[in-house]
Amino acid sequence: MSVLALFRHHVRMLFRRGRLFLVTLLAVTPAGVLLIGGLADADPPTEIAGLVANIGARTFPIVALILASSTLRDERDDGTLPYLYMTPISRPVMAVTSIAAGITVTALVGVVAAAAITVAAAWIGADIGFGVAAFPAYVAAALGYAPLFVPAGYLVPRVILVGLGYVILWEQIVAYLVTGVANTSVWRFALSVYADLVPAGDGDLAEALGPVAPGVGGGVAKVAVVAVAGWLLLTWALRRRDAM
Image (cartoon, rainbow, N blue to C red; front, side, top):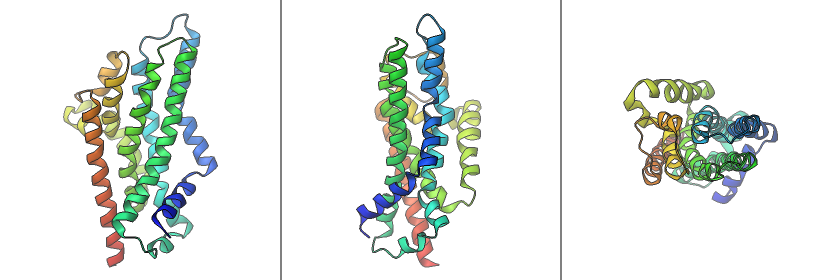
């Protein structure tokens, strides 16, 4: 099996219709709330950025968790993982290929979510820039979450529970209460990209960011560090399996 064939295999496994449909519905929740709220009011809402930031924080990380953690976990559950181990692909390349597949599918769902926000903003007469800025933000989130959750799905038996602990307890509660913890939140890294590109910020967006400064460069750099760390972790885990 070639590297490209392995990548296609992972992507095909992640494109299971039932799961993909449900996580996409979850991802477009911010657009749905924006559309319903905008249609209910005579004037377009003024705090769209905060709405996208806060509802997105409660939906897209879970989408990323479900999809990315399934990349290798599905292989294990289906009994195909031993066959992948026998492919003539080095463990670092296998790790980056698996993570790339998780990023790709997660980012595609994020693009759908951003497109839905753009359509909802246009429908209610708001600035579509709030949706356009969401495209790179969701892609950045996928680039940060997938390298964490792909190795987690490989290493952790109950990865969904552990992952929910991170995205709900750590990112949404602890990071709000403890200032320094905000700098360990992947969602805030992605949100710093959004805040730098959005047409106008608001109090809710600033509160969601916390001490993390807006900036595309800073957000992308932090996400890149997370991605490299996740790749190193998965490479180590795959090599450890070879040594057993």
